[in-house]
Image (cartoon, rainbow, N blue to C red; front, side):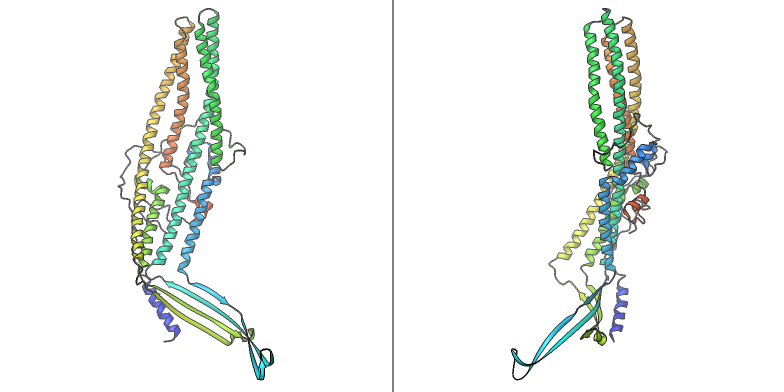
Length: 495
């Protein structure tokens, strides 16, 4: 049997054996916690949008989120990690191909021959022979993946890439939520500042009323001092609001990836937007399959399962095919084609004794798989509670805002009635003072409660995973996400 026949036979045997695998990867990954058929809390009917922040109908906010998604430093760092994962996946994928190397050298040697009875290296007759050898060899080697070690490692690296892409989506949702909440907090503080100015004006009017009655002998000095104290207390709140406005502007600029010395991010309105219609939570399995953090955890379970296959395959013999061919010339390039050489090598390495290292690695990889399954289950459990909690918080916050609205109306009526009685000489100033303090406190609390309701909605959108669009992920990171968008809870992400 010549060399070519032996190589063909080796390739046939390798092809037949490559279908073997040391480990069968589970295709149906399920968490250890049960997923309910439906959520306990009721939700609305509105459909959640992928770019959920656009439901607030704030063009400035839309522009800020877009700027954050392209300029935020945390997102850029995730993009770098995604690039690293892509390089690792390509490196592992390269193991499926033969490795080919070119080896070329130029060797020159000189030999001295002496002849004659008195010939010595210091004198006499001698002949110098210079030999030049130019070997040029192409060598190739290829590992026969008989037990699926290379395929398992390659698939695990591709799954790591997909999980990192899901991390990027999760980070984008987090950053967009932070931008929206900071924006709403900034609007609230601007509205609080405008409210304080109106309250200062109202307190000045009340002070003129008390001073007028004091001048007529119908009020005492205590009433004047009390109203002055109330006016000073309201004015004292203004610097704190101004500081909070500046700090929130700084936070918003940092989320956009801007330094403090750069221009202000945008002109902020002084009116909070209306809360959109309550979205539909849908079915738990569908919602959980839409969340990128759950998809990333499930993909990492599959990657860990493939690494169990790597550890198991490492305990079986390793077979490598190698070969080389080339030419060797002497005395310059004119004799380059004089000699053609070739070589075929089959190398089999079988572990006999390693002190239990490979067996320990199998045990370690299996325990690591159990750990990531528990991590996956914990992510699922946390997501279920996040959604339920978000629905409860919004429902109760709505009730709180409605109750505060009634309280605000009663406070206005109380101030109006106490002021009318005081102006008619039917009582002292203390009821007016108390009603004024209560009204202005409730006005400020009402603004905070409305902003908190918007934050509750943002939390609900994030829990329901209004997702970063796949086309943005591809455009920003260049990642292939085949199969990750359509993967549902319990399914296998396509590597």
